[in-house]
Image (tube, rainbow, N blue to C red; front, side, top):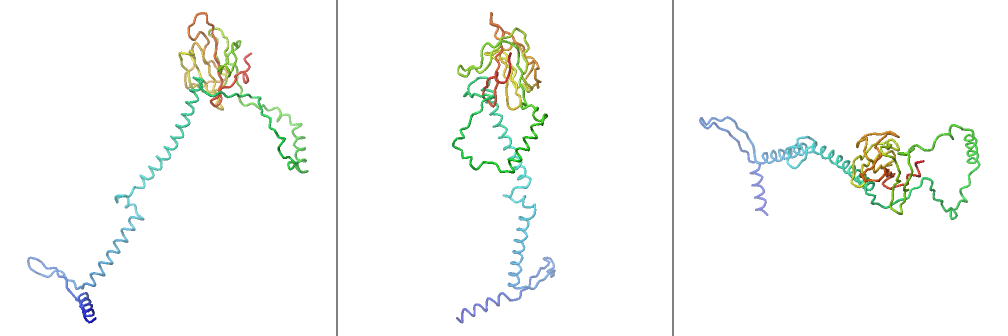
Length: 290
């Protein structure tokens, strides 16, 4: 115990033993600077200096833009650019998916390779309501009174009842006899109309031409995109008067009828198709060709 106490006293004596730091001029040995200190002062000053350096460094990294110059830290501008690129890439990915779906629909129109869907404008499937409990659906007195009031108001409202229910009307592309009707069973997804040479073929409605070119199997083909994703297709034309990208009005001439494949003793015909959301529909249900 005495030896440990003696060693401890010697250590404390060394720590508090006063020393002098002297700076001399090498040529003249003149004292230019001197400082009195001991080991304890040096330890305390060094510890405080290290703590200050750590605190300042942490503050610079956490709260100042200088951290961008430290290896391993990304700049704020780089992060902003990366975020913008991620948003743009996501938008482009969605646009590519939409365009691919639209192109696939156009390919179906040109090739007719798809599952057929029957669409009838007058078809309403009757629901079987025999199993539905209607015991709790009887109107209250106030609801019945409101219904009677509305019925009286609508009874004499001439302008309300005279408003048209159809927002988009299709017109016949040309006047002629129908040689072959729409028939899904025979995979004939169009109406074949007999025409004379140079008969104007008109757009059935306002829209944008998305295809106008010659094809080996169908001669000149024109495809017009209308509102509500409706496509009208005109095949076997002898020539076209509009190009891809042109905007046309209802009844505007887009092609001329004729012998598309230059076959002798073959009259002019129009192969007209109507598509909705990628599925063929019967044109005679929406257009009066007579």
